[in-house]
Picture (cartoon, rainbow, N blue to C red):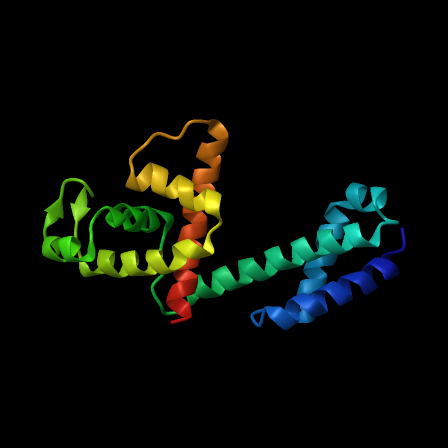
Length: 179
């Protein structure tokens, strides 16, 4: 296996990722891609002749790195950071209209099982803006469980729901930082 060839390909992939993710630099992405290639040597060796496949592996590793860096920056900046539990609570508020929720402000609600606050109202608005950014399955699972209160049918759907909650929280944080 020629690591020079892999380094050149990693450089091209890193350049394309760094161009679309301002949070990372090309050299950092390249280093992360090469580390991933080293850790996944058997898969790389098995598909060494297929440059398209290698590009996809490198692209995925680079984008995951860029996403981790962005999430870390979001967590450490001075703006609010939504957690998955807050994302769940925000989805539950979709049960009410804005007017109904406004009347509950400052009071405890039995359906939501919490005190309705300004923070919950803000989270609701950010969740409404973030929901369309999720894929259709994630939206359906979130609404099924947290809005309609229906049980999740399979173990795979449970895992997908858990990932959907995390994805919603991430998108809510993205919405918050792009306002």
